[in-house]
Length: 301
Image 1 (cartoon, rainbow, N blue to C red):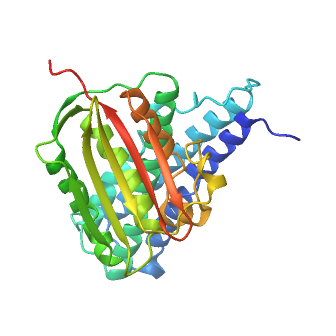
Image 2: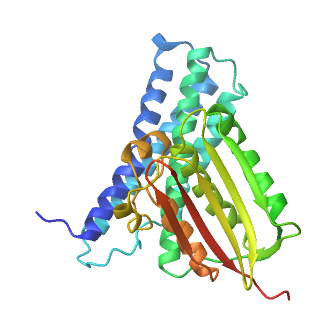
Image 3: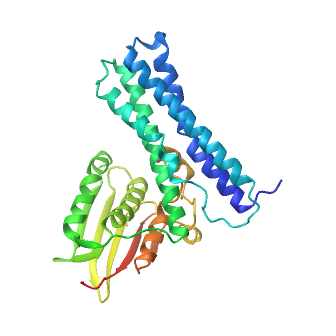
């Protein structure tokens, strides 16, 4: 049987969203096993509620996927996921927080590690659903943008601080070259998401111990140009044209390690296009990559 592009996308979404649920259920069963350690009744109830909500999410997802597989439309537009798919994650993350903070009673080291793994996979699942949902809204032209004045220097400082622990761990040198007194009217949350995608990619692909990431921002007539430059492994020229296609990632092993459904660059491009800009890539194998994007300056009103 030859799968259509749409069916391939549905299968990939199904696989990506189901993958984090397996360890969540596994660690829950482990915590409920007396051989792993004793828990009190409140902790047991919380763990059972996590399992209940994960099973509900799996059932909901299976119903969505089954319905989509019956669609014969060849279109690969992501009109697939309802926002309600996230509903079961709210109590799951809440119970994880209560267990990890020992609000329901003490847990030993192994038990806390199991709770942490449940939490990590629940957060990953939440991020995946957000990515698929955002890509869907962009394609349908329903994404909303809330513009505000943003001080670029302060914004870049905040973003780099968020990644500082990861950069320190890999001994990455981070530099900023930001035009002074630069302010832009933009959807701040979208700009943050764009930078998070680009900086995370750079961190993943720069070498350990001597990696360098530079962030640049400068005014250019009616645009502000931003760049994220690294000295990483670079991208082969025949791969650059596919970078912004849905579900593409440079290396599937990085997807398994760092999560994500291969939509980060697609979503970033969608935001940039909608805000009147464009994104481009310059790369050389073994020397590094620069992602640059422009954002149209909005009228000061």
